Length: 187
Image 1 (cartoon, rainbow, N blue to C red):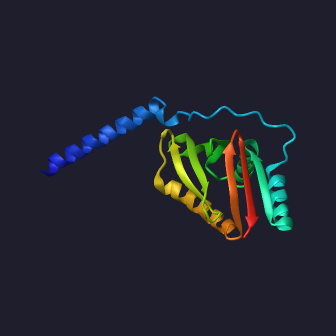
Image 2: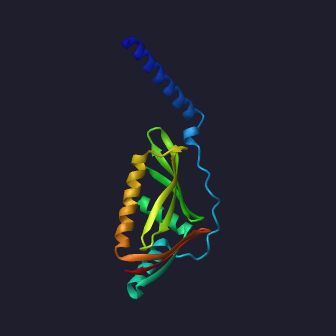
Image 3: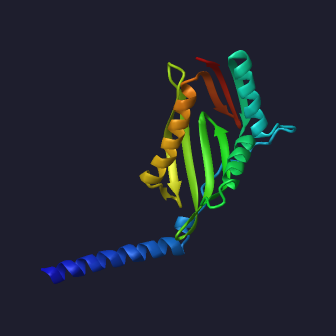
């Protein structure tokens, strides 16, 4: 009985190894996600840091703000943040604002090589002015992203949103045609 069980497990692992090898060999795990076509970037855009600083100043002065952020500014902001972490396994990030969603694409260095990542989230504004985020898609190398990996990201995002929501309420949030537009006020 033990010999039979050993043979069954050995065959099962052999099939798993063969399947993984085939997936790597044919490029399945290395395939790139279908990213949207970039929209033209308006000329003379301020840096993302300047936009966020102006929004913070407007909130301080008036208690209200309308933030307009282009997807190229969001991409630059994330790339700058990643540049501050040279050991981060994420690179080549692109952020898109389309149809009420935030689409993020990147390359992730892994033990089996560089893999493409795609995370699509849909933020919504609750009745009390908080932002909640639901994940529509999260893939790594063309397969579903491990939940543990996603949980870390979502916990950090949720913590940041909750800290901000303690002081401010969002009145409106629009994500379309390459722009994020948010109106908020001090609580």
